[in-house]
Length: 394
Ligand SMILES: *Cc1c(COP(=O)(O)O)cnc(C)c1O
Image (tube, protein in one colour):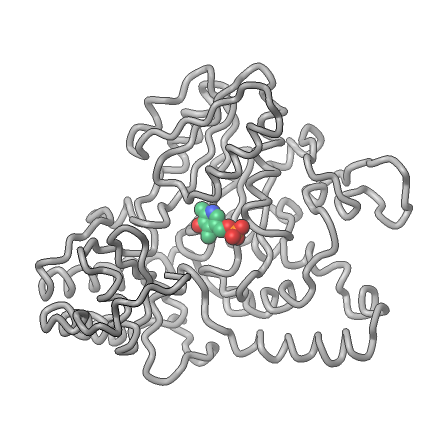
């Protein structure tokens, strides 16, 4: 049943509309971290790799994430950060299409994905080219020059959502590899990797999945492509038998070949605990709740604050689990809002962004948030000089 607020540590008086950027602390994660530190690391020491199941943890957590993205067991590997997983998937995809030189993305993608592509192009140094048309024009740019179509399904700024099945089919009809970034999809919208037939997917776990700051990323390889997938970062834990200490690299015969080095056990453990609240969640029910909360917020805010422009798609079918409004004084307004207990975030140049997370939000939270927003905008509370100071993280 949703919501399940009692499973999260949410500070009194805070309405948290930023779980799309950093999920809140699940109570079980806190207890688990303490156990890992004090009992496992503290007492079992290095024995914990075997006795506390540390060595199996990446695989176990990968299987739990797999269920949430419609991927088969064993097809998801955990580790590193999303930017690194983008690098690995992109490098492997380019190897699969050596005669093609174009990486097609869009100009709504998260900059890190595009930076990684640029860096990889420089590293390979074989005249690849990154193309970034507007998201709505991506289909028109898919052709037989394209090696990889690399897209983030849900736009981090506007919440606009690509049609995964349609784009994947278009990419594959043109002979290109499809790579999806699920950063704003995993735990936000139903995803069916298996049905999509896409070759690769990557994503992070500190957003909707509540794994904690710096929680490890995930990477999915379509199971029939494992053998063809050449790991660009061929570290020892992607080796078939790391403890043979072979001098030559021989990749694992599973998605685990995309692992690199020692897994972040503390972070994996908090993520594992966070995933407990996902076990009985039906993604379609979660989606219905997310749409209801988002629709309510759009209606309430649009009615109360006509000076704000909705920049997310109005049609919920084209939107992920976030809603954004453009407002000239958005930065100051967001600081004022946070100061009044409603936490969202700001994305340059003028976007006020709000995430909807039915695990710990209900209709009452949304109407209160909209009322506070109306007060801040209509009474110009944001004009207070204390709300003008820019922090490093917005
Ligand atoms: C959040 C996000 C990232 C962040 O990458 P990290 O390596 O985890 O810092 C990258 N890409 C997209 C699309 C994101 O939404």
